[in-house]
Image (cartoon, rainbow, N blue to C red; front, side, top):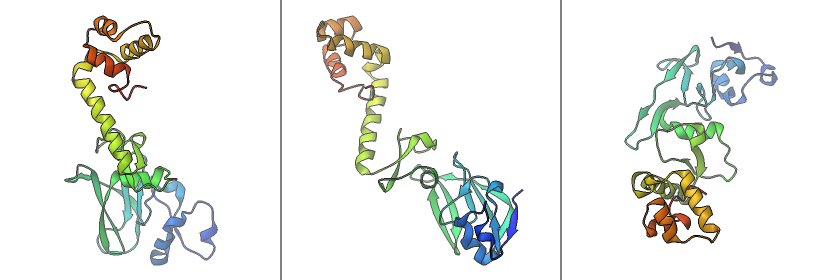
Length: 208
């Protein structure tokens, strides 16, 4: 159960209060006590929180009644035409549609370079695991897409004949200078062209 504390002149400085919700107190006269909240506040949207696994909760009263309630409601996201999970949030009488991956990054992922976009490392738009998200730009996004296409291609075409360990072994043998492309192609049962691409990191590029 969420504990609500009445605002007083000195409560702003008391430990446990969340300054980002202070704008709510000017209208409702209440503050959240941090230890009672599930998740952390969503910046710019008082009365909403988000957890590290992307669950958004609302502590706002239903309808047009101002103020906050003492029971959280879980907001259910939907998949938009873009393929991303989105959710509807309200503030100052207006409704906004926000992507879950952007809310997660704003809340939990530092952005020291002030990148404008939140990228999915594996290009799977519904994969909201924090480890799969990062800040970036168009250049980084195109690079990720290229790498991911290579990985998919290698798994579905001829390179699927080889395992990761075999590719590493091939590269080490060629680096020693004791074997040729033809020797490796015959040993691993692939064509000379594929052998050339593998040992020169033109395929299996994700495997350093």
